[in-house]
Image (tube, rainbow, N blue to C red; front, side, top):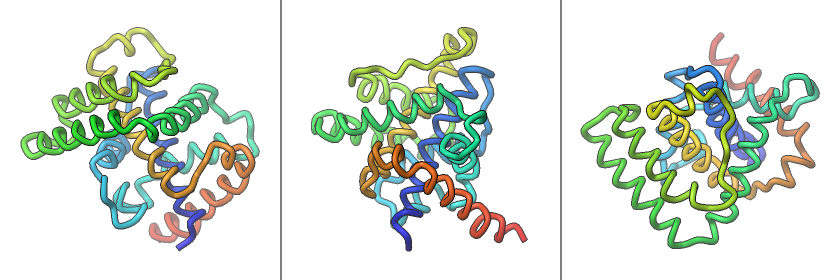
Length: 212
């Protein structure tokens, strides 16, 4: 299995979470299935494969599409906010990886939230609020803090704000996976076209083939 393919999937995981952050912040909307895939990835802490983090490749359609839009040749499709969120998460992941105390706090928080899912659905508002608190108490404490742009009516809504924080936590989970696979910010800058082409290949050869 290609390591470059795995890196592309992990990168798509980051793009999927940040695309959902953008949609909630600007429109107050989110795709329920995509949202659940992101939240489930947080709890996949010992996966057998990269696909196992997300369930299956097809569940990363939104992330792969966003990756192609952001890194592909058509600059008119690029979104400055999504690019900023992705870069910020990758930057914070590097800092997080060197902070053992915070890593332990993050792991303990996720384990507590995992036990909570024994009583509530994984996207229940109680679970999302818990994940949002974990983000606020750990990753959000690492400077520089990610500033989400959008409409105040959504950003100031507690339920929507919790979803955004939970999604940023999911984005960090994919950023950790990306780093574990040997990914770096420089690779995105220097090999953006190849990542875009690999995402397109995954679409054509793996996802669309399953639909026929």
